[in-house]
Length: 134
Image (cartoon, rainbow, N blue to C red; front, side, top):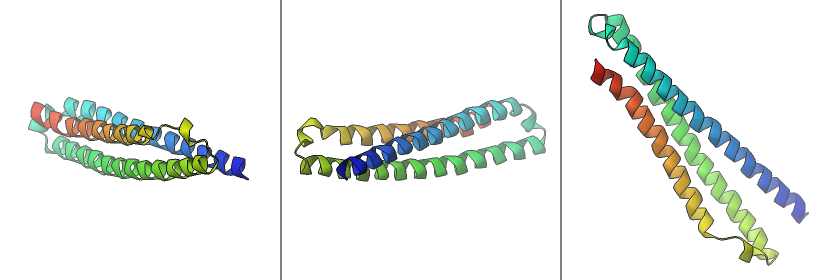
């Protein structure tokens, strides 16, 4: 039974990682695409109100998607932490916990924080730079 639970937890960790990758890549790609589109439209937005409205719509999309991604990453971080704590407890019960370095939990938390920062910074750049160019 322990092997089954171990396999299930590691499977959940892998799924968590795949979901986080999708969140991160989606946000960064959207931020960069919006940066390119809005930067291209910044010149015409000086005289064309429709272009300016479209730019604001894209900025709204950036904000919405980035909020969803940050919430998703925070939930992913919490899920990973809970799964790893369960795994560590299982290792303690089996007296093999000495093979798992507990500092890895801090490393995972730092990594999630860095991912969130990348998403936020690319979102801010994608939203602000086109208006500066305007």
